[in-house]
Length: 299
Image (tube, rainbow, N blue to C red):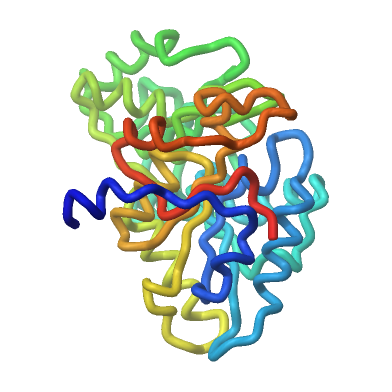
């Protein structure tokens, strides 16, 4: 890419309708786009439904791609509770699904679960034993035990012990933070980063890493019995530069950044009456840039 192209301004969309005809498949983030941890964003669901209703050479499809450390059915249940209609999407792919597949490759293993009990459905149907850290052959980190009050610093000693024994880690949620009740809450990604920093071996299941995009495209190819759509007809929508935008860029997929998500405060969007203004300066300081910005996903 030329310096001139790299410096080109990132357009701001008033609605997804402005670019919808250019795509056959949306890989849509969940938390921060379809809901904020409290309520569903009705306009976002309506936009996805309208996209799916467009005519074209092939059906328009939406796959929700989430770094949630639980199987897809668990995410679907959460979305049902937030009022996100199932008509808004065709399939769900989660970090939990990828983690489950990774663990299935190591039958009979002793696994230490580092994270809240609510994430334990990730192990259902697997041939493994959940054991204390001292007995583990592998650790799966799904998050902090109490993400309301803890930080990665609280795990320093435990991580050092695991590193001394050479225990590999699967990070079942590469996100560093997520928005909940207008607060940024630490995720498993901060624990994995701390472990990697001291030399621990970490495998990441989810965005921004390539396997999740390969899996999503493969899933898209099963929906209609057609080959996966051309990458030029795929767009990722998400609210995180580090995961959604960087991952799409590395996979050769266009991306749209939802500004009212985890970067809202950096963009001066903490108050509802503040509108999205010039984000060029902020984007110029990011390691990657989206193809477009939208305040919230809406048609």
